Image 1 (cartoon, one colour):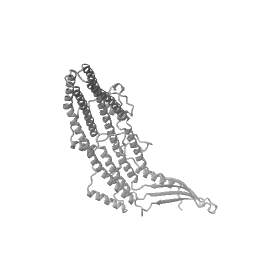
Image 2 (cartoon, rainbow, N blue to C red):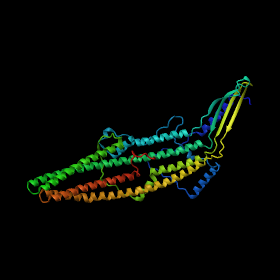
Image 3 (tube, one colour):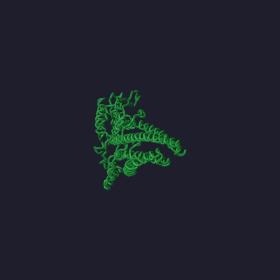
Image 4 (cartoon, rainbow, N blue to C red):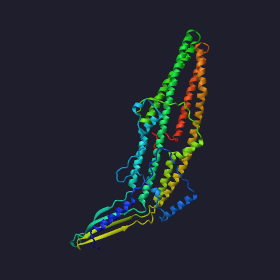
Length: 496
C-alpha cells in the first residue's frame, strides 16, 4: 500500500489518455469530391513479383509478425469536408444547376432540360446523401474509446470498519494505428461513392438526351401522320369525283377511304406516342411535373461517324463503372492492411484510488493488461481480405470486357442506323415524294389508276416511317456512347 495524493493518479491518467487519443484521432485531409467530368483511370496491374512480395508480407503477419504494417500516408487522407466539431457533415452538392426562368420557357432546349434534371432528379440527391452518410461513418470509426469511471470497495465490515472505498478510472488504448486504418477504409468507400455519384450524373444526362430525342421524333411522327391524313383525304375526295364521272369503279373509292382511315389511326397512335414520350421526359427531368411545351431541335442533322478505337479508349479511361470497380480494389487492399494488425493486442489500463478506513491511508491501485494472441491471430480475417482483393481485381477485368462487348454492339447499331438514315434522307425520301406527287396528279387527272395511287401512298408512308425509325436508333445509340453506356437513372442505383 502506497500513500499518495488522492487526485494525482486520476488526473495523470486522464491527461495521458486524452493527449494520446487526441493525437490518434486528428482529422486528416482527403481529395476533393469527384464531379461529372472525365474520370482518370488508375492502373492496378501488378507484376508477379509484387504479388509474391505482398502475400509474403501477409504470411509474416499470419505467423505473428506485425512489422512493416504501418499504413501508407496516402491511405490516411480523409474527406476534407468532415468536421469532428460538428454533429453532421455537410451534404455535397452534386453540380446543382440553375432552374429555367419562367419567361424563357417557350420552347425547351436540350440544355435547359439537362439543367432541370440535375436540379430535381432524386437519383442524384440519393447518391449525395449516401456520401454524407459515409462521411459521418468516417468520423465515427476513428473516434477513441471512452474511459470508464466507477466506484469500488473492499474489506467492508472488517473489524467493524468501513473498509477500503474509492473510485477507479479505466481506459482501453487502441494500438497499431487501428483507428487510422479504419478511417482509411471508409475514405476508400467515400471515393467509391463519389464515383457512383458521377455514374448517376452520367445516367441522368443520358436519360434526358434519350427522352428529349424520343419526344422530338414523336413530334415528327405526329407531323408525318397529319400530312398523310391530308394526302389521303385529298385522294378520297378525288376518288369520289372520279366515281361520279364513272372513271373508276366503286372499289377504287373504297380503297382510298381505307387508306384515309389508316392515316387517321396512325395519327391517333402518333399522338399517343407523343404523350408517352413527354411523360417519360417529365419523369426524368421534373419528377413528372413538367407541363407540355414545344421542343426545339433538329433530329435530322446526322452526327459524324465514330472511330472504334477512339471510343474504346475514351470508355476505358472515363467510365465511372471502371472507376467504381477500381475504388473497390483499393478499399479491399486497405481492409487487408487493417486485418493484418487486428491481432496486435490493445492495452487495458485501470487506476483506482481508495481510502482505508481502518488505517486512514489513501491507497492507489494500477492495473495494465493485454490479451494474448495465442490461438486467434485473425487468420481467417486475413484470408478473407486476401480473397476479397482477388475478387475485386477480377471484377475490374470483367467490367472492362463487358464494356467492350456493349460498346461493340452499340457502335454497330450506330453505324447501321447512320447509313440507313443518310440513304433515306438523300435518296429514298426525295424519290418517294416525287413519285407520289406525280402519281397523285395523274390520278386526279384520270391518267393513273387507283392501284398505282395506293402503291405510291404506301411507299411514301413506309419510307418516312422507316426514316424516323432509323433516326430513333441512331440517336439512341449515339446518346449511349456519349453517356459512357450508362442510362436508366431512375431504375438503377449505382453501386448496388
